[in-house]
Length: 218
Image (cartoon, rainbow, N blue to C red; front, side, top):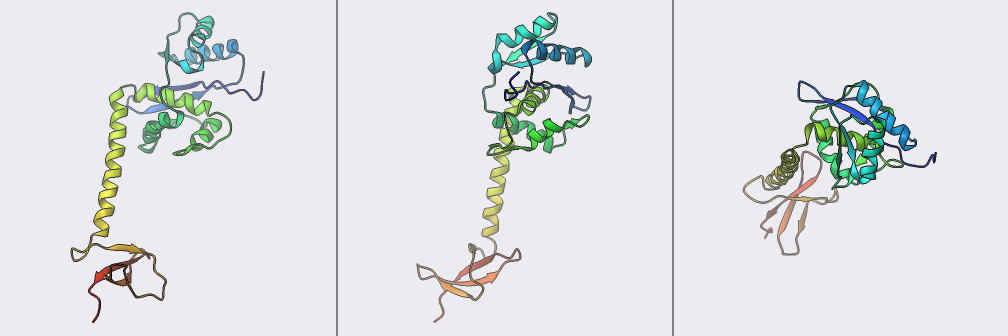
């Protein structure tokens, strides 16, 4: 078995009565198809799972065939990953932030991979197979409805709009005149703008310098 080959992500998760997702096991491994097929079926039996979710991009019907070869009676649903790993992980990351996903035990490799996800991409080594399997599992449990994903992105956009609005309000406070954030040297107390406007420099509570336009002194 090639030690450099990607692992097969096998994660068991369940939906609790409280509507939260619970990660129960991480059975990911690097092995031949017959071996990981048996591992999937064993996890299905051990946790009395309702369904096995498999990623079509990985092998399509081959995945279904390998699992069914281990047990022809298990329920398998093959899905297609239409978005990149980072985009798929974003809604699940939001669920973690809301305290709606819980780990029942310690899953060192899985948790390391989750921590290596950033908005710029995956910063860990190799492929995040454990984390990717978890994303599919939690998405199936809590984000299966397309409307739930759209609602997530709507809230994200709304949050960014609120932040922009708040920032705009901050710079417009005081005497109805716009405030301008500046980084002025400590020994400067006033400056003329290119348009001839005269600015008085003062220190804001957060340490940044701000200025108000004033009529130039006679």
